[in-house]
Amino acid sequence: MKVGIICSNKDPEILWNAFRFANLCLEKMDDVFLFLNCGAVEYQEVDSPRHKLGDLLKSFALSDGVLYS
Image (cartoon, rainbow, N blue to C red; front, side):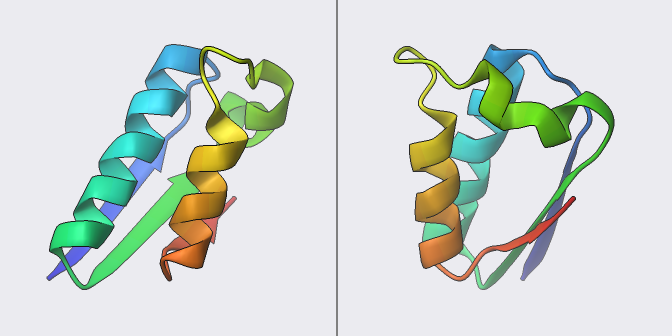
């Protein structure tokens, strides 16, 4: 199955949940595409110890997820 996730919000909690959902889908499904637009492309600016966005995105990429931004 193919799953596409679009995120355009810069809010750290929304990005964190989008990345977590993408990783969960990769565990259960074949193809996952994550598209970041608008403020979401600046996810590195809102990365924090509470919302480890960089770690989640690294896991996504290493699990063969496809990222578009």
